[in-house]
Image 1 (cartoon, helix red, strand yellow):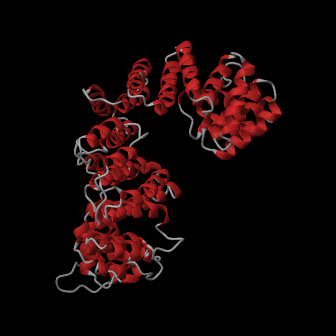
Image 2 (image 1 turned 45 degrees about the vertical axis):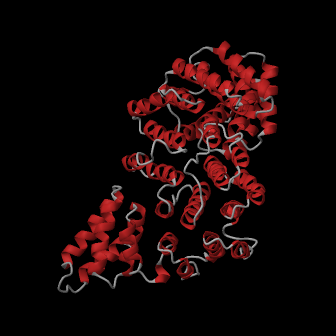
Image 3 (image 1 turned 90 degrees about the vertical axis):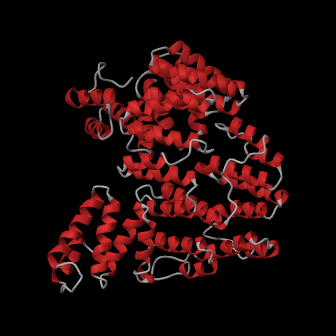
Length: 548
């Protein structure tokens, strides 16, 4: 219901004893909307809940209050409101909350009613067999658990986490050999959740009495691998195990939310992640994801406060620290970010990831020489731990810092070292080729490197841009325009691509189209690029304002 419609309803409602007065109702609704718009969703939920109690016939107000309460993490209020909203009007995250509450109260049999399709809010019944499987596994009924797993449809809503959940259930049943291939499959599919999933499986295999397979789960993990190995060798778990139904639901909801963030970046599933944390408050992976989503909605202080609830002993603390520093950096709170990153890098047990994070922050602060040193420390640690898979990316970061510090010979040496380790890595080929191109150094080899990078990563807009710019620099202007137009289609918001396209169009005599591309560049351009583009729009392309 539109705001004006709700206010109209409030103004025409007949006051009753114990309810809000007519003018108070309208004022309360406006205050609630203002609170929500300013990011104070907890206050918005409280105000709307009061309004819903005063006007129980207004289901839309109760539904809005419910959404605000879930988004604010006030689950006691959300549960109270959920039971006052008609089932046909319950959003998906509210239904998930009701499922979670039944599970937490140890009534999983009652959860199914909230998973059946109601109104237009979707069919979630694919989760029922998984709930049944976990319920059986928790009471030690292996036959019942495996039978329930067989009831999961082939093309299921839980398809992305099917192997993962099956493996965790098998480990709960102490069947590590059967769980291993499913666990490996799940790690391969985990995407941004890979570290969390690896650590959870390591704990689960350890609990099942299989230390060897627990160690296998962290092999190649990268940051945190050394600490995880030491912990497993000592027989200690990292607190990441998924060994009960609430934990399983929390993981499923977190995985769903991660997929939604990737597929629908404009609609952050904050409510769903709040429910995941309610299902398992120790799920630090969900906490980190929620903080990222809150910060993206300008709820920065709320996000940072949330991250501070994660214990420093948590096995995912490096990832949590990454999120903290990134949020502070993006908010230009460099002093706070520096304190966190520097403290981690200065600790006696600092890992290569701590120095890499510190280097990233120093680069953002334009302290390029210090950043290069931090990346150098990260490289030394990774080499000492024989983490060869991490080296090429760390060398790339160090090369970038060195180039920004105008130390090109050292940057080139770092890139060449990285290419000996990973000769077909398109990011390395593109970086070295483009850097040579800018300097007019060994142009044939530069173009060949960029062309190889483009062949290896044809959908990467930045590499396509490099290829177009190489063609432009070699005098193949028509080819360059066609290539740069492909790059701009792949990533129209990248300022450098639009600047390059504008320069190529201008050189070919297509002045009007060039101005269009340069104006498109200005939408996102900063610093040097913005200054060059403005000069070109004012006076046309000349050697002083041409892109390098």
